[in-house]
Structure formats: structure tokens, C-alpha cells
Image (cartoon, rainbow, N blue to C red; front, top):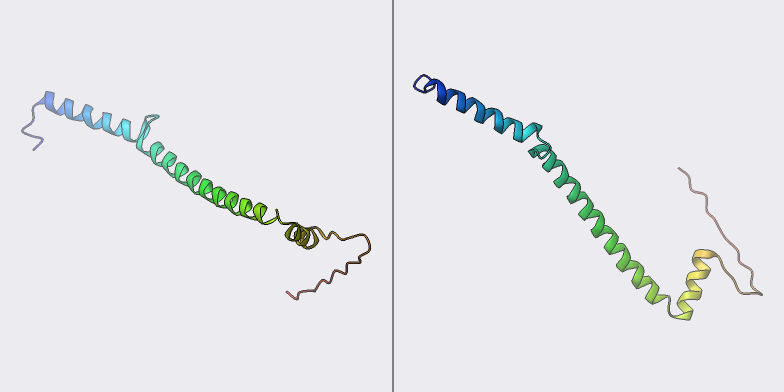
Length: 97
């Protein structure tokens, strides 16, 4: 096939191949850089989805805490808060690893 091409066609073909290789691998907008950026975008979208779910869960928890009984229970369990004339006993269990 290459023997039938004249010299000018061979030079144009070589330039075309060199241009394609340059654009695919060595240019600042190369395929490899686009692939890397696409992966980063996908990772960031997953992170965004995770935080949106966490925000939704936290909003639900805040709505639940609007009730004074639920708020009191939360304060007692999470922050070990107590009323004035109460004693709290914390029981911790040792776990064997």
C-alpha cells in the first residue's frame, strides 16, 4: 500500500499521524487529561450525593428534635445532661479484642 503512494502523500500521512499522536497524548487538552478530569468529576458527584443524603438525614433529625421530649432524650443520651436533682450512672463495658 505504501509503495503506491507518492512522496508527498507519505509526508502528509506522517504529519497527520504525528498531529493525531500529539493531540491525543501530549497536548494540554489531551484525551488522557480529559479522562482524568472525568474521573475527578465523577468522584466529586459521588461526594456531593453523599453530603446531600447527610443533609437530608440531619434535617430530619432537627425536625425530630423540635419536640421537647425528644430533645431532652437526645441531650441525655448524647451529651450526658441531667436535671438538677438527678444522678447519672454511666456503665461502660470492657470489650475483649
